[in-house]
Each structure stands twice: as C-alpha cells, then as structure tokens.
Length: 220
Image 1 (cartoon, rainbow, N blue to C red):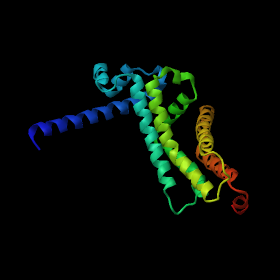
Image 2 (image 1 turned 45 degrees about the horizontal axis):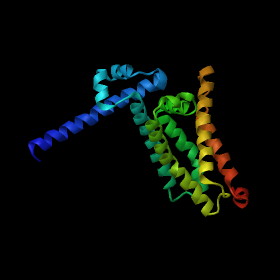
Image 3 (image 1 turned 90 degrees about the horizontal axis):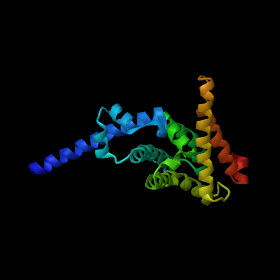
Image 4 (image 1 turned 30 degrees about the horizontal axis):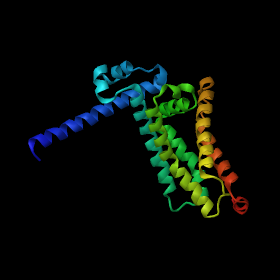
C-alpha cells in the first residue's frame, strides 16, 4: 500500500469515527429532547464539535435523525431475523418468543425506542422531508420482513389460520408500540410499575393462540 492510499484509508477511518461520534451525541439529544425540540447546535455541543463540523457530515437534522432511526431499526431487524432462523422452534413457538425479543430491542435503547414510537404516532412526521420519510419507511419494511416470514411459515406448515401476513405484522407492531407507550406512561405516575416485559410476553402468547388453527389451539 502506497503512502497516498494509506493516508486516504486513515482519512476514511477518521471520517467514520467522527460520524459515530456525532450519531452517538444525536441519539442522546433526540432521546432527551425529542425531534422537534432538539437542534443541530444541541447535538454539536453534546459531541463537542462546532455546528459547522456537523454539517460536513450531515446536511440536516432530518438526515441525522434518519441515520439514528435506521441504526435502531437495523438492530431490530437483526434480532427478529435471528429468531426467524432458529430451526429448533416451530412458527408458533417463535411468535410466542417474540415478546422476549421485542423487550430486548426496547432494552437496547429505551429512550430512543420511545422517541421513535412517539414520532411514528404523532404529527411530527410532517416535519420530516419526503426523502427522510422514504428512508425510514424503507428500512422499517426491511425490519418487519422477518415477522412476515414467521407468519408465512406458520400458515404454510399448518400452525396458523391464513391471513394476509402484512396485516398480521401490522397488528404485532401495534401491540409492541402501544404497550411500550402505555407502560411508559404508567411509570410516569408510579416508577415502580414496570410491567412491560411480562405484558409483552403475555400479549405475544395470546396473539399466537389467536392465530392458531383450531386443532393446534386445542393442543397448545
């Protein structure tokens, strides 16, 4: 490797490290303040950089938010994909195990997860550019694809009644997002009320039994 190639490689490494520094700061600021209230100046201050430096790496708050959002969703996709790939579990068992996986996703970044779910359930989406919306929607579709795979396998192998996989996945996502937001709101009144994990586990078990074919339901 020549001197120029080595120097270019070092510059690329430094750029990647700086991007990670910025996204880590953005994750913290967005979690604390929400998308609307957070500013690029807040993020620059958290990252201990100038605002001008931030704009060398991200053109806008929209782009930075999309990057942080996509990081979380990629982790979600990875975890659900791992569940879908388990050969020792049948589709019904995978669906019941989804509660534990979803809780682990929440635990990975609780504040950011809440922020993302609040964003999706509010008019704040109107403040994002169409390009950013398309990016988030695209990665969300990829994230939820392993859900669809579990449902499709269950129908094909005779465990589940036949329904449109997208509709079933939408219901599962709404259960997750709704329970996270509801349980978090209850904790605001009483911090000791931390029932998200057992509630998610129960919800997925009930959900799986509701999808089960009659014969399988009787044996479950």
